[in-house]
Each structure stands twice: as C-alpha cells, then as structure tokens.
Image 1 (cartoon, rainbow, N blue to C red):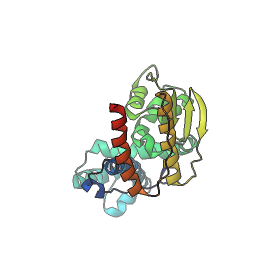
Image 2 (image 1 turned 180 degrees about the vertical axis):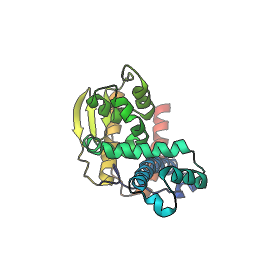
Image 3 (image 1 turned 45 degrees about the vertical axis):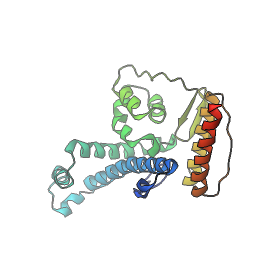
Image 4 (image 1 turned 135 degrees about the horizontal axis):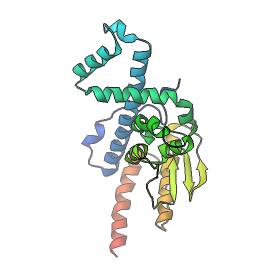
Length: 232
C-alpha cells in the first residue's frame, strides 16, 4: 500500500519563524501547510489500521469507540474530528486506485476526501473526481453538498488538476508523478507562473540560481527594482 501520496513526507519546521526574509517566511508557511495536510491523511490511515487490525485490544481498550474516547481525552481533540480523520483514511483506501490515476496529492487537500462519497451518490464519477482535484476545498465541499453539481464559475483559462495542466479545457502538460519531489515542485511552480503571466499578458524571465541563499538575495533585489520600474 502507498502510505503517502503526492510529494512525500513533510516534517514540521519552526526554524523559519526567526527569519525576517519574506521569501523564507513564505516558503516555511507553505511547507508547513503541506505537512499539515499530509498529517491529516497519515492520522486517518493510522486510525483505519488501528480499527481493522483491532490493535486497540492490545492497548487495553474493548473496542474502537473506547480507543477514540481515550484518544480524545488524552490529546484534547473533539471526537467528531477523530471520526472525520478515520473517514478520510477509509475513503482514501477505498478509492486509492482512482485517486492515483488522477494524480491526487496532499496539495489537493485530503480534507476533501471526507466529502467524496457524498458527491459520488449524486453526480457522475468522472465529474466528481475531476472536480476533486480542480476545485479548492471550500468549493468541493459546497459542490458535494449541492443538488445541481454546478461548478463555481472561474475566470481562469487554465486549471492545474493534480499533475495535469489544462488550458481552455484542453490537456496541455502531463507530469509524470514518479518524478522526484524537487523536480515536481519546480515544474508545478513554473507552470503556475507561466499561466499567470499568460493571463496578464506578461512575460516570464527564467533565472538559474545555485542555492536558496542566492534566491533570497535575488528576490529582495528583484522586488526592489520592480517597484522602482513601476513608479516611473
């Protein structure tokens, strides 16, 4: 079983909080958001294994409900939250092949998995899985709860669904999900930047920097110079 999806296992990093560099702060925030999303799925999968394997018995609990209550008491978390995590884990395992086929990743938001089956009871499977990766969390939840299945109107001419870039509804680029994590992050960032530039009738300047220190220094200089140009 594939335990983790998308970009692999992230760890929580607090070192960036001491930085006054906006680029470093932004990177730290984004990495920890990814770690938070991935932790939800990891907890859900752990709860599923605890339940299906009846491992709670070895810990002295008579059933899964007793284990959840003990977990909630010791970790100070709501019971509804734990059961929601369990539901996310079950849903991922049930639809794992479908999710992998569409390139679903932690970036797409595992929380949406809690509403996947509700959407599948109302709307065509192909549409549901397409919307799962193309919609934001709030939009997908609203979609799953709706009766019409209408997708929120977007002004964007492009969409990034998992590892597939669509332009005007047509597949433009398909990334191989087996690429290494760093390559995927870099290519996804380049695709987003390019599409945003196209929408604004802008241009893209490709700059190769050797390390993060060069990136931080270059970003500060570039930001300052761009402000100067726009004031002229």
